[in-house]
Image (cartoon, rainbow, N blue to C red; front, side, top):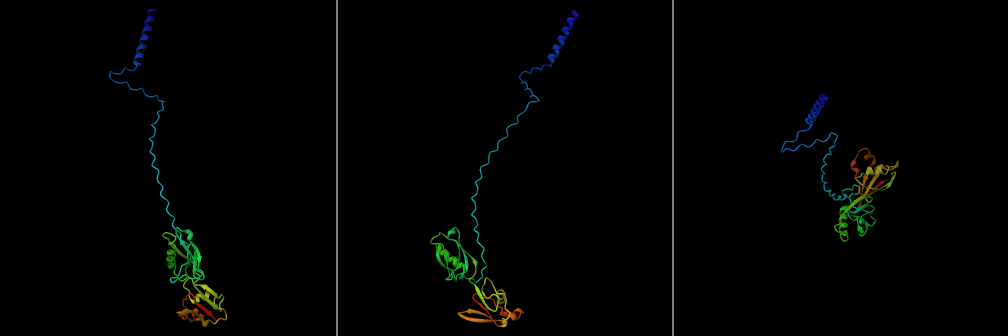
Length: 237
């Protein structure tokens, strides 16, 4: 009985000593105990992202004014002056109500909104532009005018006689007698090719120039193959 009691006391003493050894040592005076570590399973929330300040709203640049588009016209000869039946495009920038496509009347005038009748025949496109600008100054502040020649019908030559297609032909560019005869379909079988005449008005009087179709066709006496002028008439007997 005494042995059993002693043995139990010894066991209790050993257990107490073991438990005391496992307890953490108290912190030294003046020192703060460290905070317990977070459990392994604990989730650490990341710091919230720093907000980026919004950039100021950009001010849109004002739209550029559309570049005016000039309609295509025909290439005018260097000595061109406006004549009856020519077709013109008169453009007033910023004043589209005044703009119009017009044909020159037989009396040489054109009709435009607000400006009414304006003389055009006998003027160059630049001279007509200046006249229209002056006339529009009464109604429009600082008018800007452009003249576009759409068709040249006043510069004509005439061919008559023994050709396939006699009649008037527009002279829109440099054209020789031989070229015009070809445009008219060529001479007919019984044409007198060596007696063709080009009639022209110079200084108020009519002059004539001979043209030998056969010689020029063979490359001879090419000085006969003159350049035609508006109003010329080719007679093929």
